[in-house]
Image (cartoon, rainbow, N blue to C red; front, side):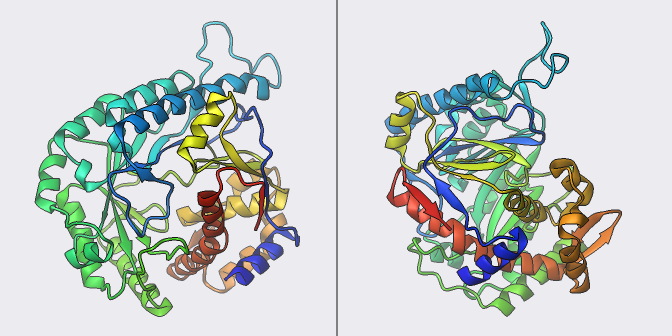
Length: 434
């Protein structure tokens, strides 16, 4: 797997240089002049630990969660307070005039985990800290465990300003919940509670490509989701991370492709809008995704930050995260300084997650036409039927979407798996070469 991703990276970046992460980091994050900036906040606490979940998490205690949030709010303030030192306005005309709102406009704010709803009584406090420095224009989303879907918690989230929720169902089929080490989901109870408290987006997350999973079973899950009150669904493939302990076998490539194609066609035939490789909704403006942003700031353990020419990741250790902020420093563990080609590759990979790439937006971001840098590759993708192109917008076909998924699986196991495994073992590694 690493050979495939390495050769692809070498070709697309026109370099044999690996991705080199160091323990050096910027004390001030230069984000003020960035457009399409998103925010992400990580709450790493869970009532129980799922064996298949690769994300940064630890067992919940009220005391530790509250202490963590105290320092999370300090991290937000540290990043925002330093911004004025990092990126000065290009000229005085661009600087905020007296009486103007000097807060930075951002697209969205997402809370992930872990189980963010375990801290539902403090999310309003975190959001207030964000609102001191940022104006969120496209809503606030929170991930939920099915156990969190109660009238009290949903009302608490709505009062805090949350407009979107994503519920990690994984499957309504009891046999797959057993495979995943989770208890059965009560669909009738979900429907009842979701009917009482309304949100702009109600997304249900499912895992596909579980051993023996059939089209009819996955279709039944999707139908049940919309019956229960969802207006958005995400169908993520099962990925077997090396450090996970689930022991779940991986579905064969041909079976996975057939399942993905069949379920995609089913959703499109029903009139659902495909907003990314894995997501479908009842309307164009119903979205839930913390991934498709040109740039983003991440706060909390394991949160990542993507800026114009750099990418950083915070420590995975809650204790070391707190100690670093107590010392007055950002909790950055590793940073990569992108070459231009590396940044272009990163941009294209994650923009393609939305199933399309707009060449005009690429040129606006990098100041150079897409065809000048990757014209041959674009023609090749069209020739092999991976994309279609009209008006400078490249859209993935079903074939292209599957092979994107297939390459993403390689990418995840070659890069993300190795990075997260390293970060789980060492709070502040000296460096990492991928």
